[in-house]
Length: 180
Image (cartoon, one colour):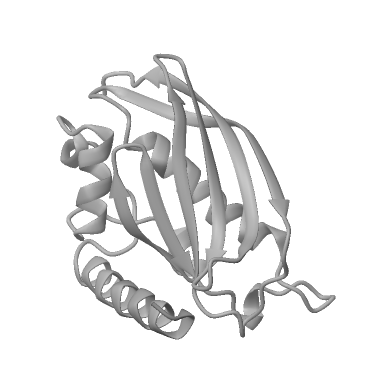
């Protein structure tokens, strides 16, 4: 598949998923009753199909979850001029947030009932400048280790041509969610 064909496929997938998520629960916070009895993967799948709300930050920074499976989460975004810093390049926070989302959601897919997580460490490396002309970019997060108290993951932001833009690692603390 050519880069242009991959970009077209990515945009088609993104548009369909974004429309489904927006016409479903939209952005917001999940009601604890709606996630009770769901594993982390089931929660992420419900977000993807529009049953559960997605995070407001995805709307703010123009990216979306596009795929989840056990130990894996993929987000797609395209930097816009509003994501630039005053020096004229994409703000590092855009890359970091896209990567953190892929990392955290990949970890989330491994959580059994009654478990939660929080990011303890995030390391980001930007290796190629993206711009509003870069086309769609995907952050692919993969869990390396999912233990009872600790999880680690890695993620990469890549273009449709396979070029690497940034990569990151995380360490997450895993804990029992208190009953409400």
